[in-house]
Amino acid sequence: MINTKIFQGNTTNDWLDNQEIRHIFNSLDIGIHIVDSSGITILYNKTCEEIEGISASWIVGKKMKMLVENGVYSDSVALEVLDKKIRVAKTQKVNEKNIFSTGIPVFEKGKLSKVLVSVMDMSSFKNLEAQLNELKKVNERFQKELEILNAIEIKNNAIISKNNEMKKIENLALRVAKFDSTILIEGESGVGKGLLSKFIHENSNRKSKPFIKIDCSSLPESLIESELFGYEEGAFTGAKKDGKIGLIELSNNGTLFLDEIGEIPLNLQVKLLHVIQDKSFQRVGGRENISVDNKIIVATNKDLYSMVKQGKFREDLYYRLKVIPIRIPPLRERRIDIVPLIKFFLKKLNDYYGYDKTISSKAMKWLIDYNWPGNVRELENEIERLFIISEGDVILEDDILSGDIKSEISTKINEEKTFKENVYDYERVLLSEFLNISNNINELSEKTGLETSSIRKKAKRLGVKLNYKNRN
Image (cartoon, rainbow, N blue to C red; front, side, top):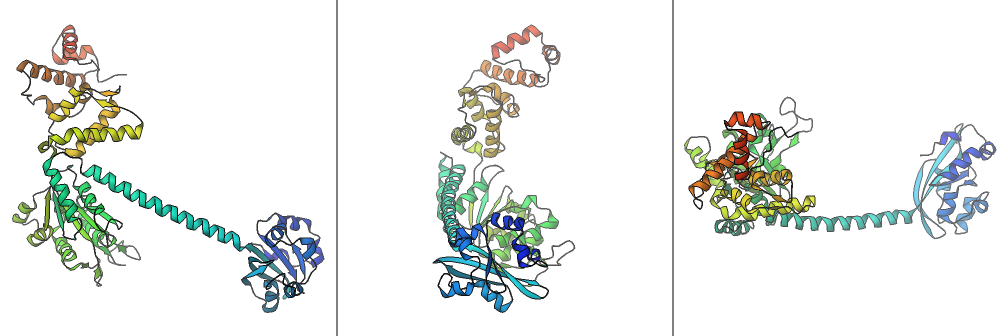
């Protein structure tokens, strides 16, 4: 913005002689065209020359009225400002070019003495608009490609399975995805309930709409109602001035996934039932019914039917949720999936970090024999741990025995091995456990009650490296 005060108190001649001001105007990236009170051009900067295609030496001293009459200008913002004595902005043609000009009146002792006109080439706007439109198209293409890649990733994460029961679940999920019936996903923690819900959403007609996940166990009971349903202004002390939209409302036209539904308090289960049945609700402190159209998927690792019998969960809500029940079996019931899951997680880590790590057959056997109480989530975390701590390109059984899963594996009998081989396996795990609580060979000898020479022989026979707790 040009400060018009620099003209006030100066005569035209004084201003024309001010070389510093002329230099400033000529260095600007915007065209500046100044006329006096008679409509005669007194300054025309270099940018204006480039935009309008007119030289300063030719236009300075000429009347704008004459230039309009001769067709150089289709119209004159400066003349309109001189007539109306107000700021004027408009599009005009100069030498057949579309120019956007803004005229600003400059007053001196109450009288209009000059008009400052800023000039911009409309073609630059069009170029910017064209570039913006192209960027929008590129963004749309990227968005579509990202949606496709996300859908593929979700499918890969949710349905990595060779188990027949899991294949049936996948087919059922694809069928129910096309309908708006409520889905109840049951299963232990870590089996993939959240991934299956996203898989259903990505294969529904709502896939381009929001997928809102709510972990009911993570919300404090005092806040869960306002988080789910939102609230109106002044609903309670500390409420935001303009109120707040709840997560249920944010899922409108999309999918609402309520994880750990068994944690919803009884008093809110009635409101949730109304959302499912009536497709409407009221915000906290509100009186207006808000309509919502969403697909509802819920999940739990609890026995909801037992909770109904105990009076901890509403029976009507239970049956309303259980329109389409899906139970995901734990990983220990589908051990056939452990190997493909390990390969999938290992490949993902290799691709991300640029490695080519593999896992030995003995290490794989340990992982297959483990019960995986944390299911797929625990398996993924364990593979990441093994990937990081393994020193070479192959993950070995010693890497596995350095972790937390060894204690459960240690007491499990392998029926395919002899008694002596099972004893060796147990000794291997036991020695590894003592190593983790010892700083040196002498401390290990003291804790195990074995001579140092016996420890070295046993470690060699069992294939255990003597890596102590303090490895520095």
